[in-house]
View 1 (cartoon, rainbow, N blue to C red):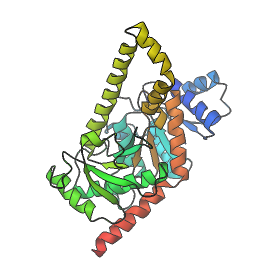
View 2 (cartoon, one colour):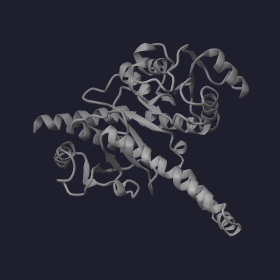
View 3 (cartoon, rainbow, N blue to C red):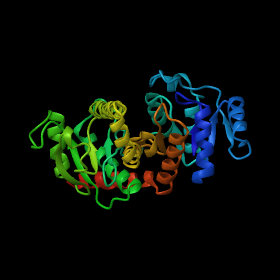
View 4 (cartoon, rainbow, N blue to C red):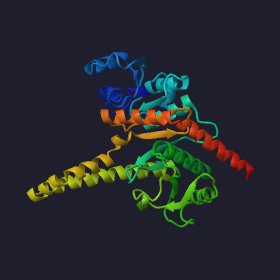
Length: 333
């Protein structure tokens, strides 16, 4: 895995620590991309200089830099990581850097797969018995109905590959369960999805269905998806903050918290974004995993493991086959 060692709020120390965890504890081979001197010092702290190779990249995208930074910094660490994948020297890219920068650089360096109109960011939501896939989570604020259909294909391919689901159910996020509810974009997308072969489209879903496991893949535009994701993350943080305050309010509450400690830890782990490895940018000629910007070592290691799994399972090829089949079917109609 080509790991952008300079991307993220805690780079490079936590990124390097995550790489060491990925190699030693998860058996995932990693190459670090970034400034050699800083990475050498970080690797020395883990006695891992001989275990993990380093590829030089003197530039790095700052966390507050947007999409244009990919053009201004052609030799950035994320650009070099993408180049390694394009050249066949790495199987996937992992970065905790600026999402806009990673998306723009990925599109520029890896290019979109044939037939894919726009790549989409895919994130797992913590539902039971398995995560629910949400896309697009921020790559495309303005879309066409046909793009939402393609997002459904991307999401199904991801659910099949990452989650092992044989026939993922797809739902369209809007303001009502009825087919006529929503904007012109959503209503047209509903019509197209209803007639699309290879997709088990169950219809519209609403905001209160996000965490119920009603469907396996939730399709929406990038603006709505990003707002939805941030609202969920904020709600989880707020709920856990309130829970901690409540437990600490009295001795009896603390005793109750101790009795439920195992369950509370299980819940916290399920809602921890670092456990799932991060978001995946689907639709490019290469696997790209975007870890949370504040990721620590555990989250980086999980992102590397997710990238390795997706690459090994041929997520790019599976998407290519789906899109080619869908386009062929559309031409016949």
